[in-house]
Length: 216
Ligand SMILES: [Fe+2]
Ligand SMILES: [Fe+2]
Image (tube, rainbow, N blue to C red; front, side):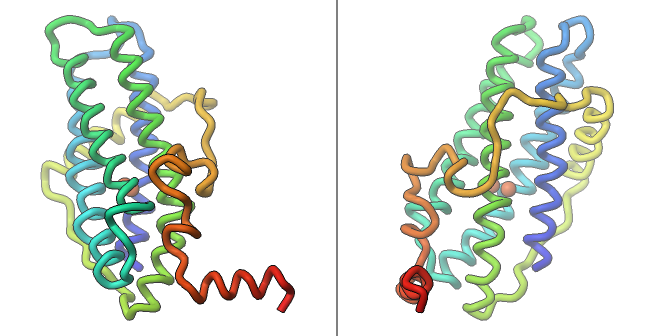
């Protein structure tokens, strides 16, 4: 499904620029410029937020709710939307560290780490659980394609600035955060989401599971 392929590819770019932002935030104030800080913010707001997260919310999640009958007020969809909102709030905090009035030093690193780690966990959850699970569920309900849209000129510019920043601030090779696939690695598991099986499985999926476990 083209939209899913696009979203997946966008994750790769967002993940890299997020890593570059950690390197930027950890760099001495004399090395990193405020213009670069503003370019990172534009990337996160326009490319990660306005382009990427928005298409997830207004196209993919809507289709999962309306066409595949999945709940949007709890479970994975509600958790992922809450993540988007929380990350937008963290960007507002980042902006206050990068607004040019004073160098925020440690505060910048703190906000950058919180934002980037939240973004990486979010990407891991979408790549390893949401995307593989939603395609067959949509297909079973007759949805084989979802609409997408091209980037606006501003979004394209934000993307190319972000890519240039990855070259200037290479992401850390061994970031100090545990990452991985599946519900069990998701910080929302057991907090705002009970896991895929309890949230999304229907009766026949449970029946099939019971049959498999009993060797039938
Ligand atoms: Fe997302
Ligand atoms: Fe995403």
